[in-house]
Amino acid sequence: MPDANNNSADLEEQLPPSKSAVKRRMLALQQLGESLLELNDKQLAQLPIADEQLLLALRETRQIHSNSARKRHLQFIGKLMRHIDPQPIERAMAAIHRGKQKNDNVFHQLEQLREDILAAGVSGVELATARWPEADRQQLRQLVLQHQRETKRGKPPAASRKLFRYLRELQEFYGTPD
Image (cartoon, rainbow, N blue to C red; front, side, top):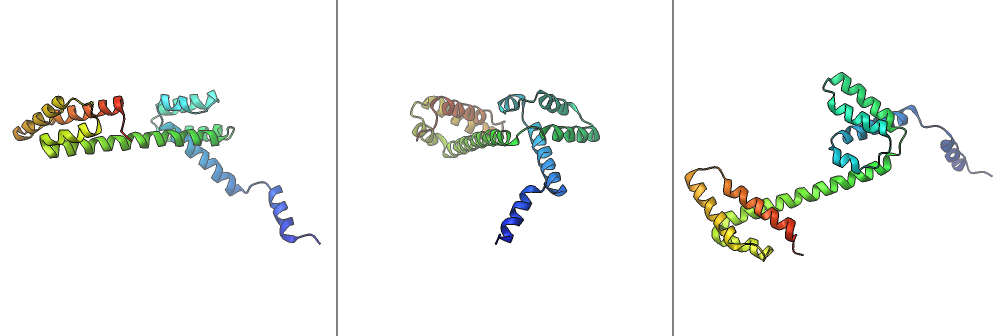
């Protein structure tokens, strides 16, 4: 005797998706298209998009400032997205976002290190040299002293910015010790 549950599962596989399911899928594709607009040209080139018409539509949408025209163009992008496989694009975008998140974390760590160095004063130079033994102690010390003078005089934090740039150079050149 055939199983009733098995027949209903076969029947569901044969039925086309409901209108609601189709609409949800189209909206998801349109939202994916909108998220593509947030990427710059370099990031967009990293994505596996072979459809030139879609790439052209994305570039055109960036130029549109009228809300209604932009909305229509986004719908057009959603329509174009229906003809491509979104999975590779979603994976590539996730990789881009992970890279951005990693860069943001490194940036915040460098900011925190700069603040720790400046808060500790001249002895804070040891924080940087412990992380990067190759760092120029004299340059670090001069930047800390310059920051202290600027703070006393109420001047803009130019030395603080220079210190951050120097720390970023050290990070890029020597990396982070494990």
